[in-house]
Length: 330
Image 1 (cartoon, one colour):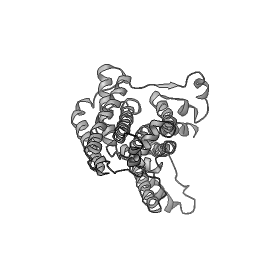
Image 2 (cartoon, one colour):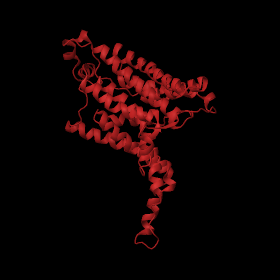
Image 3 (cartoon, helix red, strand yellow):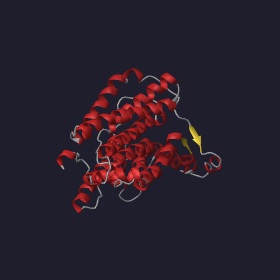
């Protein structure tokens, strides 16, 4: 049982890293007032680009950097359409997801059979070799890939950037009230561009981590809806990085559980009352195909929760989210 729990926690940490990167980027983008529904496409492009560069150069660090830069490149399209041209943010984001899916499906076919040596697991320096001996949590928390540790470090850094630096507070101000921010001397367009590009960098990092550390292979469509989960996770977290960390681990746990569902037995003993009724239900719920839907069912529940909270005005959504800004209209 200890071995199973340790393996489950280790898988949870690895699965959560993708969501941490993606949700942090979406938080930054939406705090600036721009909704990015193109996260899925950006992650796919980052995953393929990072994988291809790693195969060609043999360096997973260059691959990781390439994934980030490709995420920024995709985000620049979204920024130009929604900020400069004031296009509908929802339509632009969905277009980018479709574009990323199409491009990676077409150009990624020849890389499916390739193999790489991705990010290896490393131990936390100095004290890590002792901490990994802690039962259940030691291996998962203190021995992992470098992107796993980077994602964890990004949570307090993004929090500090948004809420404790002038640049971050200016970014939040243009997401709350761009007219007032403009009158105070804040460059609204510059801040919104920066927020979207930073969001794209995090999405690209999420995709690169998926192909270079989590799976160490490329498969078309391998993001498998994680970009949409990240968008819902931002709402669940109420646009707070620390809450996104908790949500990422909850969704990561659901992802890890489906991969280990065959090792879980919740069957009641045949002699137990109601066993004949309960066991078929448990068998159905623990079936791998059914468990694979749990992260997406949780996403739907988050969105339902969002609707309720919006009606009660308790969610804390950035006031100017989805609203294009134009000085000429003032």
